[in-house]
Image (cartoon, rainbow, N blue to C red):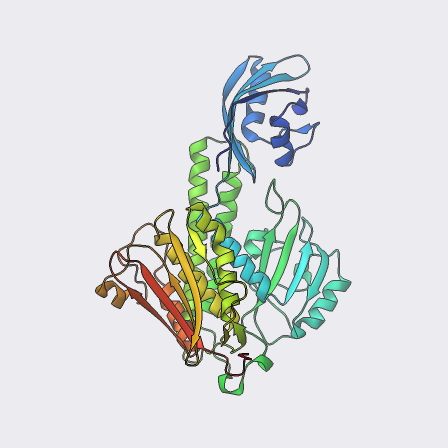
Length: 457
């Protein structure tokens, strides 16, 4: 929501171009951006104006724009050079909350899933050195003990990223998603790095999560055990693609945030577009990797006893902010509702996130989406209903096809979400279907086996 206002502030710098006095709101913005008073000016556009005013000895003024993790501001800055520094006058200060985008919500949803699935978590300092370690996976006991004894060392000393020969630690964006070597585990593990810090990602350290490619074997029933399959194109190519794409994103973010020095707004915007395109490519790589997995004849999710109502509520919670941004109301199952089912938790959540995310994307602003759960004849169902344009008979026959986007352009989708979701549902001995009519919205129905052993009392 906008919090635009017009305010004036005065500030003063010393001979070393350090900010030594500042009035509100400049002072708060400077501190949130990682600065100190007294301390270096951390807003590149303002620093550039101060330096030029001192070099020329002339009064200079210009419009400046900047943002931190909370606000984006625009203002008119005037700098008057003096013998011992400069006097800064800020006028027409306009501050606006940074909007939460769909991409931000997708990242939040992804992070929630990562935290749920991780077998080991650790807190790292700004140099990616271990501060604390905790783990729940039995096959990570040896690694966890080693990390505990190695607090203060880089985490990569213990879980080495596969295929990275550069000096460690690398930039966190290059390590995020990398496969790591865990000698005492038969599973493959991927590192997920979450940067902390309002001024700059990673300026307050990181959270490290190790996420497995599958549950422990003892959780898989004899019927679902499959022999080891050879590495396919997704396993081979995805890590190779992630490295250069992550490097592109890291460099683009450095340019966008002007950490390498001031530059014109249009170039900062170009860099933002490059970073967004890179994030889209990473999402596409993930989709293609998942596509290969679900199309493998030997793929079989690990059956588990879950509460479908609870999974649905979690999916609604993850996507709640994205819906709110478009004024869409999500109607989730009630807290006291419970529908015991048999399915893999993370795959069921993945399907529901896709269905609800699609409903938000294609529903009218100010609309409503209903998520209902029920159990009938030994089947557990979750229904996602929206008020969108709906689908005619021809569109319904194509909506689950691979790479099918029904003529949509520019929404950033790969056309794989519903195809993968149906494959996952059927792999869990269920199905995913749609009921719709043009102009009357759509109802997507996820069906999986109900838990026959659940207490129905």
